[in-house]
Length: 227
Ligand SMILES: Nc1nc2c(ncn2[C@@H]2O[C@H](COP(=O)(O)OP(=O)(O)O)[C@@H](O)[C@H]2O)c(=O)[nH]1
Ligand SMILES: Nc1ncnc2c1ncn2[C@@H]1O[C@H](COP(=O)(O)OP(=O)(O)O)[C@@H](O)[C@H]1O
Image 1 (tube, rainbow, N blue to C red):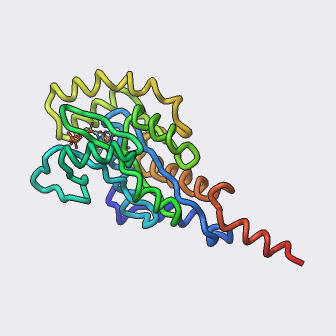
Image 2: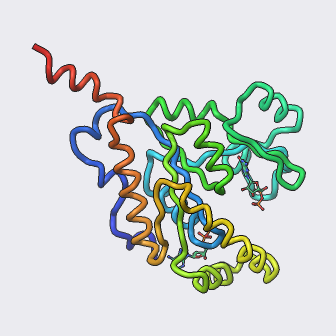
Image 3: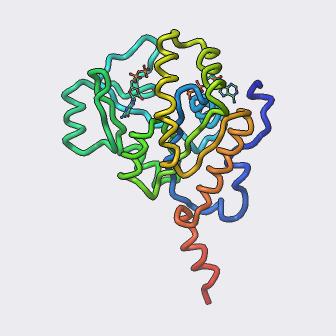
């Protein structure tokens, strides 16, 4: 379905009302799934439709690829700078993958949390655990499941980005990844993509309205109960 034909559900349109006008703290929305279940599709739709959320940009030591933009796809840094950032405790988490280092810088995300901006993470269960350990109160964890294993294989094949070997490797890893479903706050089945997207908008709307995130409520209630 073309995006223009979508129902106009956004977390904003759901979270209307007085409390939404008050200042709130931002949140860190994590989307995880076995490869092919649809997290990139959902993430792109959220980023395109919801101005309050932006994607986390990791730092990496791997060389920039054609078509990539520094600061949009990654912050490309050399090894000395990456090591300095590790030493200075500037990452929520970091890891070495195939000889290159990757990390989630804290500073920008922390500033957004204070300002009421949300950050989207497309990461696996290990990254999720690490972020949760560092920032439990700010993290909302959503796991996306495929409707069936056969459909997962169909989607990986239909996407047309991977060789038969890579698809076989992703399928082999899928069951292990699915086994971490219970480490998440919400689990959503991506059968119909519009329904799945609408559910994630509902989750985001409700999480934004949580009392602990409504930092403006203290002053509002004080005003209400004055005199
Ligand atoms: N722990 C961690 N892993 C990351 C981060 N950013 C990217 N990765 C992982 O690094 C791996 C390689 O990413 P990339 O170089 O973009 O290669 P690609 O996934 O093949 O396009 C992927 O498995 C990513 O999930 C990060 O900030 N922290
Ligand atoms: N609900 C859905 N129904 C049918 N196809 C879907 C659905 N959600 C995603 N897809 C398709 O499945 C493929 C894998 O989705 P993608 O978002 O790339 O998954 P992931 O990021 O989890 O690896 C893509 O071709 C995407 O267009």
